[in-house]
Figure: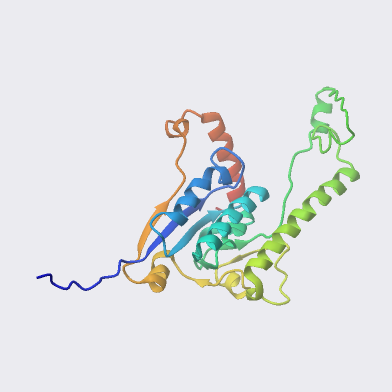
Length: 264
């Protein structure tokens, strides 16, 4: 005679994606091509109850930030899976763009958030080469081909065109934050001038939903026995053996410069 065995529900599973570092098209940076498989697997494998994003990024490429965030939202909407973001040290600029892909953003009291702006930077080397008697010869087809050339003096036209390029990127960023955060954003607050805020300050302005850490918050949402499954990008074969040293050194230098803006 068969004995009745009561049904015991399985603990909920939450897929955890770590998004750490500079955002950019290649190398060590976070980018859509490198993260596509990781993100897809996180939403599909094991039928997760939710996806958690652990974010620690000073930003980087606007296009890559947009592509990664769009992929997360597309899968979340298709699978009807909630997404929670947990900010560690910083989610600034493109890092905050990624955080806004989540339905809720949780921060540490010392997390840095914001920098909703766009930056263009470079060097002017025209005086340097002149002092050393170097003459640079440039021939172009198309008047804009030598635009923002660091080896010639910057012109008012250059500055005007740079601002014209940055403005739509900034507008896209603002529109994304407004679409994702909606009525949670504090009315009348000057949120879009690239300022940064810490922990509770970001919560008060509606840039985040509260102060909380990954495990306790997910246990609160999905039960004490919630199972966390980590998904992260694998390094390439050359990277694992330290054979792409030049690219790695350059990427590290760029990344350190971004982190340094936030004292990290």
